[in-house]
Amino acid sequence: MRGRKRLRKKLENRKIEKTVFDVSLEFGARLPDGAANLIVEQFRKECLKPADLLFYAKPTGSGLNGTIDIPSDGVLTEEHRGLVADWAFQQEEIDSYCVGQLTRK
Image (tube, rainbow, N blue to C red):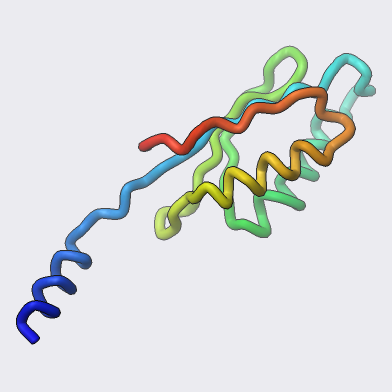
């Protein structure tokens, strides 16, 4: 009994390691004006919101570079990285993409 209590206390006191990962999306030159904004909104609606992910991005000349995070009570996993990569792979408008490794925040 005493061992369980110690273990529970250790688990409660252990901090969950916060991680993030970077994402780069390149749209290519063939997009009409305003289409990039529509792709970002589609990304947020179809990929990020259902998985409760946050996206902090800055535009580049032909795409976006950003960081994926999760609200404070959540933990990012390899599954989250896979969701983002799968979504980007399926988009015809995205010429190339890179989903970075999980890194400590």
